Length: 306
Image (cartoon, rainbow, N blue to C red; front, side, top):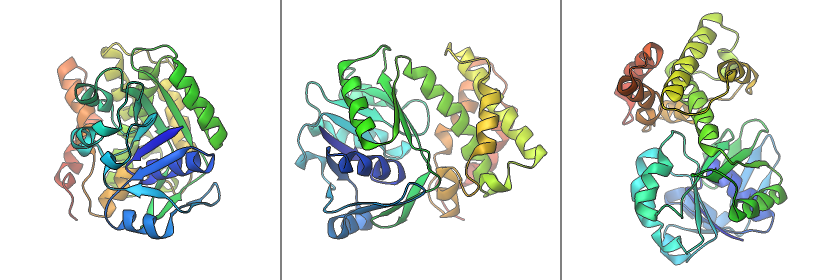
């Protein structure tokens, strides 16, 4: 199975390395110092699941040199979706499946006009991992899961094939027949957790025992859940309660990637997370007071800076 990983950061690096170790033909598309280190020393994944070292690692900054592939794990930041989508056109054959694994809710919608309906699947990545130094990705905790499926719903032969590869790679995976529900479940959780860990600049271990902060988590989950229901997404009745429970169980040192980006002074994905909840709430007439505040407080840092 030939796989291209677009964006070899925490998500793309960790899942791509696991698939490569299991025998898939994986090429990583990266840039800068991370790419240079991967070319020289390979890609190393360290942390809760142990160490994986892919050496040599197939890595490039030019998707056109790879040729058509079976699957694309599309892991760029949300502000790069359209430009990266254009850049990966040479990877797309008649049966290629592009699985966007971004945060947010609309990457698949943004890719379809560029790559076509048939090429785009939908995916959810569940992992906490970041680039530690160029060429090295550190994973916090042990959970590592992919959920993927066809945008139109139902199961497909290509989804089954990718599921088999994921199982061989040793991480949890689900070929979902209702991926939009899965996507929204992650969005509700992440839109909230990204903003709360960012605005407090703190990991879950410092937040989860504070009743005032947990009340804020729960209220924000509820707002995003209400927006999803208003859009007609099938969401379970116990979704918010389960998200509160999951948040209390996250690894003590874990923070959402947006919090890491903020602390580093980098650009953050706020407009597509709390900002998206606020925008959809206004459009649908659903109040989102907690997300309004989170969005407003973090908005000055959207483009980076201290």
